[in-house]
Image 1: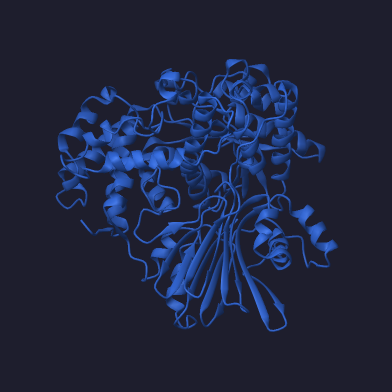
Image 2: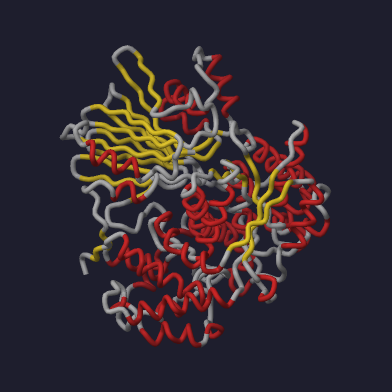
Length: 612
């Protein structure tokens, strides 16, 4: 895992732009703290910051290959999970290898297959290849969108990077937003439209998208699409195949030349990963380390709810005893949690999921002290119907994003007349997404709707969580792998009938059944519980104080946007919120924290509003 960047100019030499290139590189030092390098020609610079995971000696980047007068240079962020199969295939085709890194395999795959190499890859990745013969760039992002790839195409050139801050380090790219950007922040955030970067002129390759840049033209194409097909397996075969796919994905992702651990919440998904990893490690005479997160005095203030029926501790202990892991429980202080909201903005380059972000940032900082790689259970809920909105028929057919069904709370904190087209904007985003759901002629209305719901979750809620996972972990140079995001699992889940996916009437029922004989019964059939958040009233008090300061600060860049009474009503009546801001984890404290993040973001990034 690393950070990558590049600058391509059609008109001017870039070798002399050392100050700008250095600034761009330094923005990625947290992603790649171990090594850095650059490849430069007059009109092209490729930048790399390395987090060393596999083959320290032979995996350095940018990696180049000379073929006569032709040079091909690669910068790559990610991991390939079918490296050995590809290496064998390329060896049979006559290619030789200096080391065992997946970087070298990727470069040779490009040389062998050209742009079609992306169709050969199983992994999480974002990469760019420069070909001196054609003076062109080839760019690609993994099928699920685990690794980021931001870019800016301008008149006369092209700039790209793993993070938004990398582009903003180049004076060509300005920290500007317009009405659309404001609607994204206030009415879609912490999500964002797929392919967009909120700032004007900043885009992002979509999941499963690649592109070529040549002679001032950027041509993009989708090489991976989630497509409809008949599900041909019966119940027993489906259970067996899901078990195979998940086990295979997890075991492929355990390859590392540096220390590796897993996250363990006591929930179904992290328990499957930790159990599989522990058994795999035991075969090699090794013991697995597991990590969980909690908050000071959380047990004292925990209250059961529909979304969070029980706390994690007893389930974590059950799993630790079952798999024999060396367990580490990270306990976070609420003052630190609030203070880290602002580091979380710098990590994401945008306002985000507030304490859901900042807690992960602090957690990963602690894990990084002993480990460089971790496996985590993100995205099972989106793929296998884990969220309540999949199961509530009253919500299922509503024409809206189910995690943010109404704009009432968002509209309530803003001044009257501000962003009048926002509701229309949000609904258009919803409609554009459901149109992407491929279906079969014999699909029932319910099955077609489940496909639409899958795509809504895949392109929105899931991408928000993947953004979170990448930025918060890489801020401390920790690589977090997500086995449920194997493209084979995604495609298989899309076509699985709902009665199998929700087997026995349970959320993620098919996954439970697939691992019921491996996990303790209390874990396999535990009701879904979301990512642990703080219940300590101290955190809410800090959020209230932060919001009040913004309301009282005449220099606040967002004060003229906020309706004072609307914000104060949340402070005075936190239980009066009619619906969540963004899913079950963003209630009153999180809305106030989001306001604090937006204010900080405007100041820290010198955001300029234009075109209004």
